[in-house]
Image (tube, rainbow, N blue to C red; front, side):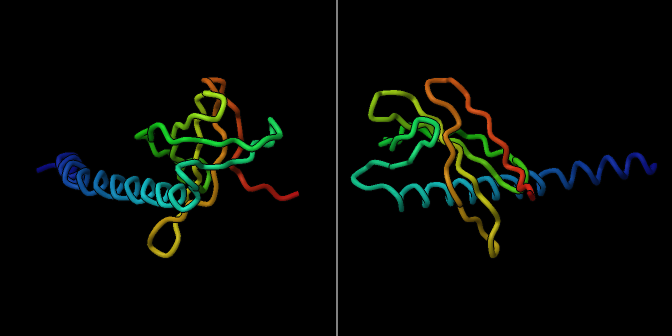
Length: 126
């Protein structure tokens, strides 16, 4: 067996372990987000102040998106809600590793009715 064959074999054997680790992190991040939202809901409504619209949004959960992506130090997971005006509101939940698990720190309005809002998650000094 050549060195190239050994490298390919090692990569193929290691692949399922890597995928399982990513799936476990994704699942744990999503669970953290669900717990965060559930703990904040009152009467089935999640309240979030929108600084761009200068008003409080009363949101009802619609669906969770499958994707969990990395942005800066955060894992970010998106869920769709419907606000009190009937608009579709996507919230990105910011998740960080903590003590062998994950903690959700906050939600950011990602888009309203398909109109995206850009944001930057890099921590910057003055």
